[in-house]
Image (cartoon, rainbow, N blue to C red; front, side, top):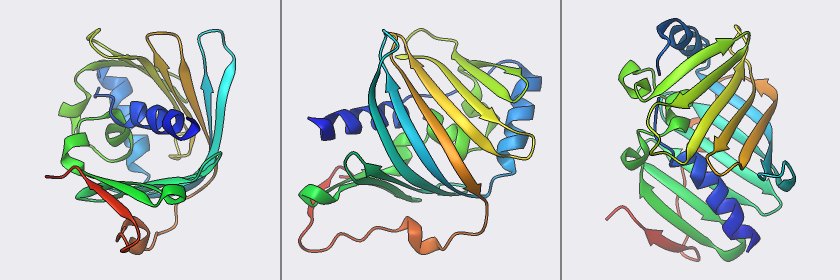
Length: 205
């Protein structure tokens, strides 16, 4: 059950669609994000329900290499990996030795990619964007999304401190990023080769 909750919460972030409006705010946010070519952080993920009670806390680490490589390693409460090698998105659960493979292009219009991978202004055209200091608020123009609002706190140096996703039903997910490091990352961190003892659910077909 816990595995299903973690899986659903993370993919709810990854599968959400894209973003913009206030040109000045978008320009500032994009310029700050462009300062991040390589990123390594520890993160704390907190899922807060509509009564403002925390229902789940997770910890892990994240590597990002622009434009489309990342390795999201959830350490606790249950270990799993979400790895992009630029073509395939791998979701691996070590405890059951199972990995699911998706075509990365099927996720090219989601908000995670928009914030951390893409510089294409066209992909920001479904949100209004506003700024208050180091906080940026992204609100969907259409009401067809489960996402009500995305907030990201990023300094003018390109240091991301926090981002949050608020759902229409009242639940929200907060990500606190700690000890950001922007040194170059070994390309091998973004590749996943299933061994023979790992069950592969291939969704790329």
